Amino acid sequence: MTFMEDEKVYVKLTKHEWPDERVRKRKQRWIIRVVILAVLFSFTSGWFFGSSTQSIQRIDLDESKYARLDAIIGQLSNTWYYGRDIENIEAWLLQNAIDGMFDLIGDPYTSYMTAQEVLDFEQSIDMGFVGIGVQFYVIDGVNIVERVFKNSPAERFGVMPGDIIYRVEGIEVEGMPTSEIAAIVMGEAGTIVTIDFIRANEVITKEIERGEVRNSAYGEIINNNIGLIEINQFGSTTHLEIKEYLDEMVNLNIENLIIDMRDNGGGYLESLLNIASFFLEKDTVVIQQKYKDDRIEIGSVNRDNYYDNFKKIIVLVNGNTASASEVLTAALKEQAGVTVVGETTFGKGSVQITRPFSDGSALKLTTAQWLTPQGNLIQDVGITPDVVVKQHPAFYQQVGMMEEDLFVSFDEVSEYVLYVQKALDFIGYDVDRMDGYMSRTTLDAINAFNAANDLEVTDTLTPTSYQVIRTEVLRKWYTNRRAVDLQLQVAIGLFNE
Image 1 (cartoon, rainbow, N blue to C red):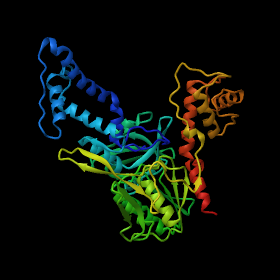
Image 2 (tube, one colour):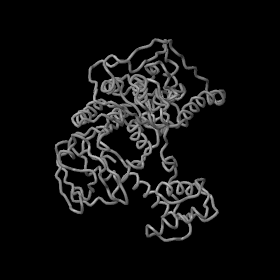
Image 3 (spheres, rainbow, N blue to C red):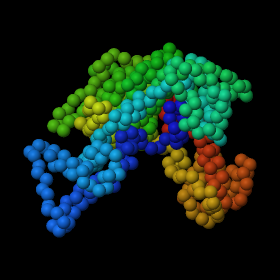
């Protein structure tokens, strides 16, 4: 978790979506239908009722290109009965007309964004915020610092991974929603927040000056000889964040590097080229952009930032690796011979640019397709890893909360049993199947888990045991991630070959 965000799913397995894409999905098609039906009704009502109650009034159109749209909006604004309940109806109708246009073109990446949506869009890419700069996970209500971002206030004030966030401004935060913790921690840059951490059973109080935090990238040394760079987004300052970690690795004579771009939804083209310059020599082709007129534009490394100390590089990807992260993966694979490990990437090879309007809104539209340096398509194809590795099946099972009054017994079939079978196998219990059928072996494993965790043994799957099992999956992942991350483990093993 970061202090800039609400509570998240712990193991991300869904593709990143831009804020404008989420807004458009929420509006759905019914809004468009309402407008269309209203337009149809305005004409048909004139036909059926006009002949008996009033003369039919023709709306004269001038010769301007958008006269018909203006006329329809004008008529709906002035005479549509249900419009009386809509504040600023002309703006509402115009927005829905715009949404309908984008809905019909069939391109989910081309959209109109309001001024607020533009701001959300930019912030989602840069991932910057004012806070202290830690990422933490929650187990049984306890907030445990997982990582401290480089050059953050937390790093400057000596916060360490493993510290437990105990009190913030004198308020105990155990069990508190992360959004509420964030509301207390965040504030204006330069102000002080007092946080009590528990470290080795000792309470440590720190008065931390809030400051600007950048968290689009993270780096560390693993196994004493392997550098790990996680690129979460291609934001405007991501290359600067990465450079700090790379410089530290150079000073430590690190020659092996893993670049983790799993769950990276992309970002800015300029950022992509800046980051590519760390791993590809100057003038090396990174991308090709193909426009609607079949014109090809080449994007190459235009500066000499190459780190020649890394003798072997491995890239980690998954099904949520998209857009700019796919381009960088392909460029490193084709131009530097790096090994790609993980799962086939998302396959978003279209290029979007943003055209701002004077009121702060903007048009984000697809202008080209990205091709790899060798001219291969990315759109709807993705990048196939050299070494295909999937995570444990427990991380691909999407199941919500179990109903409080639901109990699953022997010889029954349930989606909750399906998840529990996979989860118990991940935790280390013996299961005989993973198909959702409550076998005797599965029930025995549930009973054994309940007994080991001081839960009531009822010979059924209860909502309580189901939730505790889910929690144990997260506990094992976060407390022992390096060992249970199968894709990372394979990548580490390749350095020994």
